[in-house]
View 1 (tube, rainbow, N blue to C red):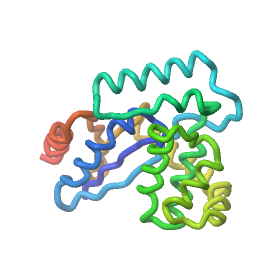
View 2: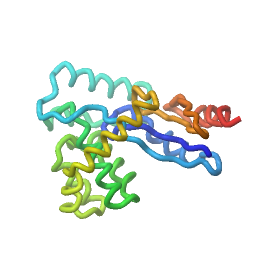
View 3: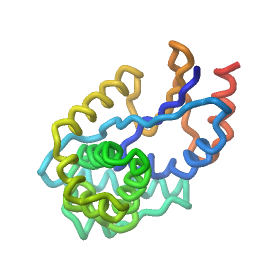
View 4: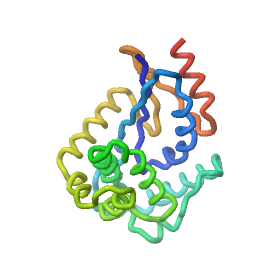
Length: 205
């Protein structure tokens, strides 16, 4: 019994950079291997504006990603059109709410959040943005808002963060391969799925 876990945060810029390789990886997983996602929860809730130093650090990270992976796009207008907050838990709860309402909407919600943040200069730390995105992917906005703000969504997030911690995950994105009762970290390669798949096959062998 083998299972691959992807630990991520929808507002993690390196997760955005990893997205094309992740899609290729999932399309090429060995036969019989199951797959799931865990939300790692990058930054807790806050209504405080992001400090200037942190804004500069994150913009520098975006530029560093573009230097290493030129195909990864970012819209730097985000930093002038919004009041950024270091708060990704709302976006994480949005993924949980979408999943709870319709399991098939989990991945579309992740993509919608990433595109809103990195390409459309919209702020997924704001619930009104997340509610709008839910409507755009075909969810009932009122039902989504109720689920997003529920204690269940917060408890689920806390549970997933705790699971990620028990797996030894300290950064995102991360991959963990579970085989029987063992858990193996799998190094992330941002340029191609081949090395990741080779590692998986080595563990299985």
